[in-house]
Image 1 (cartoon, helix red, strand yellow):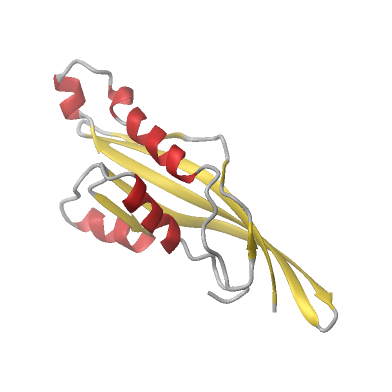
Image 2: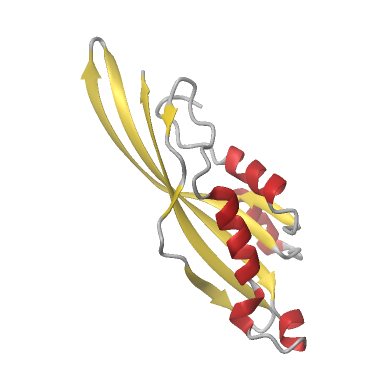
Length: 150
């Protein structure tokens, strides 16, 4: 990953695969788009780079960059099974959201070579994204910042 290339979310995807084995599918934005075209196995999580902010300044012949990236994690579960057991729709995904948060909040992903990456932080604004008769989708934003030079 270059010092100014978009943040690579691959380490976050790998972390979720390792730490949350209940997820049948874990992928990135392209995986989410492909999954919508076919039968989607749930529960699933998709890690999507939502936005970045870059501030650069010259330092002794180099450029120093402060980068902030927002990464959204979409979590989907089938809730008809929970409904059959008498659980409320919103309760179907809560344990999975908690496991994803435990895996990511405070963890430091790999960043660009030589970059000083800070631990991931939850933005504290998770919300219900979509609710259908069969699926429940939640989105949690996380923030990552790092400093690099080029």
